[in-house]
Amino acid sequence: MARNTEIEQELLGLEKSYWQALKDRDLNAALELTDDPCILTGAQGVASITRDQLGEMISSATYKLEDFYIDDVQVRLLGNDTAVLAYNVHERLTVEGQSVTLDAAEASTWVRRNGHWLCALHTESLKGDPFGRDRAAA
Image 1 (cartoon, rainbow, N blue to C red):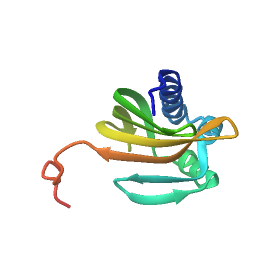
Image 2 (cartoon, rainbow, N blue to C red; image 1 turned 120 degrees about the vertical axis):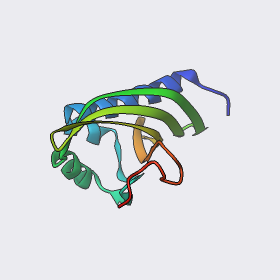
Image 3 (cartoon, rainbow, N blue to C red; image 1 turned 60 degrees about the horizontal axis):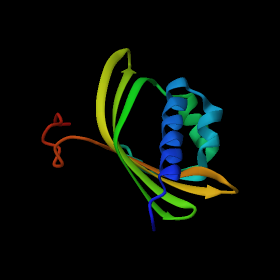
Image 4 (cartoon, one colour; image 1 turned 90 degrees about the vertical axis):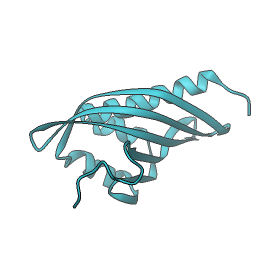
């Protein structure tokens, strides 16, 4: 499929809007961008969550996203209504009163339903040694 930079820029804008919604704790904005259900993967495992569950996760979050920076973006259109977006993100957060920064590789699968793009899958992989040697022992 030929590249469509207009759609690629639209999807990057939506991904950034999603991050901004998390930063602002704007529940409605996040939910408007989320497929139902949405699959999430990350350090805590794999989950398929409904919009209601996502709303509860955002509302009860014990951390605050202070800032984020996205770079090294790659987009692949899989069809007219499906696309994958991958990128690096640098996050600055407050967790349990402490300032924390982290770098991760992220990917989202977006689907277009009734003319609107929705995030159907989001993954987060913390950057570092792939064998975990840079993390403290449990």
